[in-house]
Length: 104
Picture 1 (cartoon, rainbow, N blue to C red):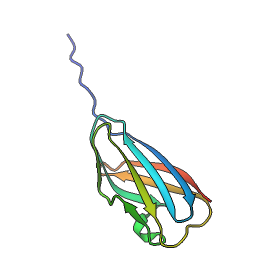
Picture 2 (cartoon, helix red, strand yellow):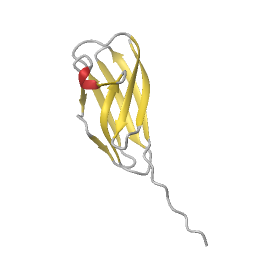
Picture 3 (tube, helix red, strand yellow):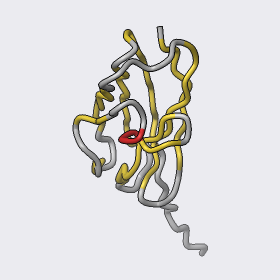
């Protein structure tokens, strides 16, 4: 009789939207079967705090249990450039979850 082992994996479903040049909403849901911790948010490959006075609410690190979701508000003290921007959520395990956002 063979014995099957349940594989443990982290996987985040990420959705991002911007209605202004100073705010991006990011919804993150842990759809894997392993707890995940968001440790960095990147804007065009740079940590959020280095881009136009960027901050996140809630602050990182953000712990996501299996099945949990969180809406993260990214706020910038000076406007981002209109157009396409790439954001990425990086977790403690080293995985990155990129998304493209259109800044109006």
